[in-house]
Image (cartoon, rainbow, N blue to C red; front, side, top):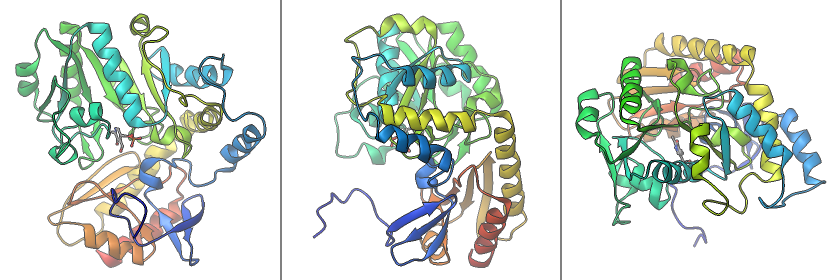
Length: 375
Ligand SMILES: Cc1ncc(COP(=O)(O)O)c(C=O)c1O
């Protein structure tokens, strides 16, 4: 038997090496990786501008603890706050942990407990974040859930107005629901949510774990909509594969987290911070981000000009793309893998593509040609 808990329906491929958008399996077969490890390797595999500083850091210092000063953390936090509405950062190790920090901060700061989230949302796998997630399948068998989370339909402002009350601490959402099916929020709806938060002293938490770090062509996806969230959470692309998460909050919230209130052994360690620092230097750059938008539009236009059988909708924001079919896509994914293209699903019926932001136009052409021939 395998000695690993069977929590993933693993594909029958073992990858051994990667460079840019290309990965190779242990038999030498090459694939175009349009998954980036579920939206993590936003700069592609083994980008030299990250490999070098991380290699150097490996020979200097691996771990201290958060009892010491860290100019590396300050550098990353400076970049994150300069490119968001937040002023201070708590570093964690994953998206779920960043969201845990956000939930705790919202409760502590407001003194209230109710957090409103949305159907099809996904916020992680810890007890707090499965309670936050608006999908029954992640909760099944793990009850009772942490109280005070309420889930309402996405893009439905009346449902939100009916749920808000004086016990509401925060509204938490993804501006493009990733795991839920690459489902963008409507612009007007987002503005209305922000107004409701302002009028009722409710915190707006945007989960940017999948959509952030340039994925949609902005540092964070909420910036397409001119919002100013109180809390932003990040992970995935932040370390390009070195585990790291971040919870970014506005200055007014800093008094709620004081020494001893929250913590982590590994969060913000020197290796993760070195990687994140290198990642942000490349991605938080206007030219780079404009190219992401250009590439996303190019790929979406090409997909729209294809004739896929049973296609219902094609959605995208930057290089986060979803092709919705009228049937389950599991077999389609397997066929594409066989033909050398790795893509993801998002729910049963959506093929999701999260290529590295460094993907080339030729690689996008190649991917579309594989899709066109096999779907
Ligand atoms: C929007 C969102 N939030 C949170 C998470 C959880 O992140 P992690 O798996 O790093 O805990 C994910 C992971 O897919 C995500 O997409």
